[in-house]
Amino acid sequence: MSLIQPSGDLSAKIKEELREPANPADIERDIGIIREWLSKQPHLPKDMDDARLRTFLRGCKFSLERVKQKLDMYYTMRNAVPEFFTERDVSRAEMAEVLNVIHMPPLPGLTPNGCRVVMLRGTDKDIATPNVVESMKATLMIGDIRLAEESVGVAGDVYVLDASVATPTHFAKFTPALVKKFLICVQEAYPVKLKEVHVINVSPIVDTIVNFVKPFLKEKIRERIHIHSNIEDLYKYVPKAMLPSEYGGDAGSCKELNDAWRAKMGEYTAWFKEQEASKANESLRPGAPKTADELFGMDGTFRQLTID
Image (cartoon, rainbow, N blue to C red):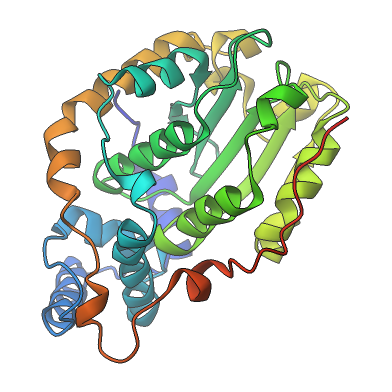
């Protein structure tokens, strides 16, 4: 699946927003600084490639301290939540099932302000609830691929969530602990700039689900959630033409886009396998090791998701 990269005036605008140095040599200098820092962290791997480091720099607006924090969490999460970062193989039956019933493709085009749009939709309200951990794992796999393949840098991400087939049964397995782990991974371990979240084809359970998730989101992200009563409202934020055909656009069907990403994920199978060993070693961390309680606050006081 090829992602259209920004160019011309749009690329220049994004670079200004991300505070990207005009001189490429300055970016290489920053990569060198991060590599030198990594070399002095006994608990962290040293295998991050230049392409991904550039994405981290852009996502952190070239704040070296923020990049260091993100990289530490990136590797820490792989040790703390192994269920998200092992057996990442789309040919496995559990993963194949998830990709058959949930479409989650980043779209090839860009919004006028240079954002990448990611669709998330179920295919059938009558299907059994898919494996929640495998669903979250697939999302993070796509995130890892984009670290390498967003080669120029985008202004941020826009998520479009289609709730048309969402049912209480589907969300019964979304435990607060699991949701919190996933959202900490997304918000703290990846250089993602989430600009907007749009929920379309809403149903009565949507408010309950959104209110359940909000406590685990940063305040600025909570303020970027938009609920739409009709598809025309979405077009005010995301151009109709860049959407999948199911939503009136020209990007192809969701299944075609999802299948293309499934193939792309398959191309990375060997890399995903290699990465299973690429994680923080808490026994070597200077100072105290990071515990699950420190990372996730697992104190047993979470609200359970209940939907009538």
